[in-house]
Length: 286
Image (cartoon, rainbow, N blue to C red):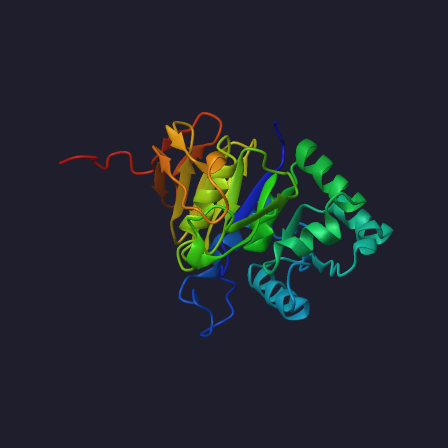
């Protein structure tokens, strides 16, 4: 599937210019991920819609984003505080989605986005516009994880390499080729993304560190942005995968699962399974 739109999934805790209590407050917000969101959306006059559906504290989260985008000079930012599924059929909300240059999903619980928005009129309009226009769909943490066709709903950390430790369901379907996990380094989510890839060995697993994201064009070209790293699990050359042959609670075995550790400016093509490193002059061997 090709698309004219742009996806910007973020691993969580991105710089919002809030101040000393923010983990990444030392980074200049003008050079951060949200600045890239504004740029890809068309600049400070773009209509940006914040959807805090995943959050249990939507007012606080919305306020933080409104402040962040105001710091970046944005003049047309609105909040769609969708708390009930029927709100995804609201005519006023649907018209805003039709007009938007960017839609940003907040963090929280990705299952809330699925419950309240998936397969509604709002979701259908988002999908159509993403496929046929220059719409930017951004999301942080839960808002990033919901973008894929197959979505992680959760996972037990201590049993992460055991079959059945990871919950999966259908996501929003914007990204058919990958599975996304967030807060990847800080929360030690290597095991649960590995199991997700074992369940779906035709999909690439992408683990996003905090304050780190992707700019995805044509559904395939993945550019890394932000201050952290991105871990990619590429199962295209798997030799052994015991996921289908063991019972829940048993340890899985995977061999030849290719792993890429990428930083800002690097590019990965999910269809061709090719990596392009920004600093091409860096030697692999001495």
